[in-house]
Image (cartoon, rainbow, N blue to C red):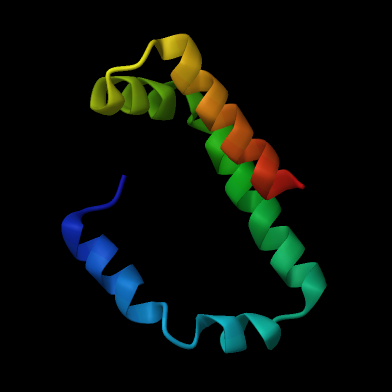
Length: 75
């Protein structure tokens, strides 16, 4: 998981990201998104536990959130 510095660095990259994304071929964008989906799937249990702890929701519901996120990146 990332640190606060990681989050700040990401936020600094947001301006202009849409233009940079347009320059990446769609096949490469698809590969990147599917890679993210794969990582979400590999780390689903950890992510669900983190969501449950932070949000105070049942682990079952947190797992639904992780699955939904994974499916979104996959599609």
